[in-house]
Image (cartoon, rainbow, N blue to C red):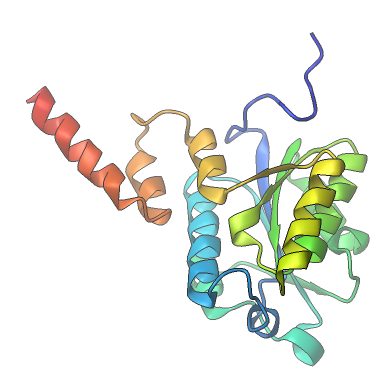
Length: 207
């Protein structure tokens, strides 16, 4: 049976990679669909959970020294010793170094997030879909500058066959098993504090 593009096979730690595009200080200041604090929280949680799950992570900036500044400090701290590929192309995929890094992950499922949603996340995700990858966008880790841009960006992604979801759901899908030794760290990275409570209840019942 052929798998529908809108209902692909599950994400796993072996088939998925994360691509974070242009979460830069200058761009973040213009975001209006989330508070800056909430967006930072979501991006750092997504990056941290992906790191715990051993996903390949590709990160980019645009003209960091002349336009939008570096990636915001909390993200840099979450990915220590990580290289952010700085480019000038609007579509990150159009930079040969970025495309090479993405393809070098060897993964068929690519999770994108970026500022802005409708350009920085959407353009490479749509290109990935055209290139035969299964593309996802973590919308809550992808801010933009007004309501219209958010609504039309989401619509265009859907029209292009890109799966849209929240970052935590994507990471939990990859986790797959709450008995995993990584489960507590993943939930903690995603700030799902209630999951700790659930674990405590399970432990007390088992005892």
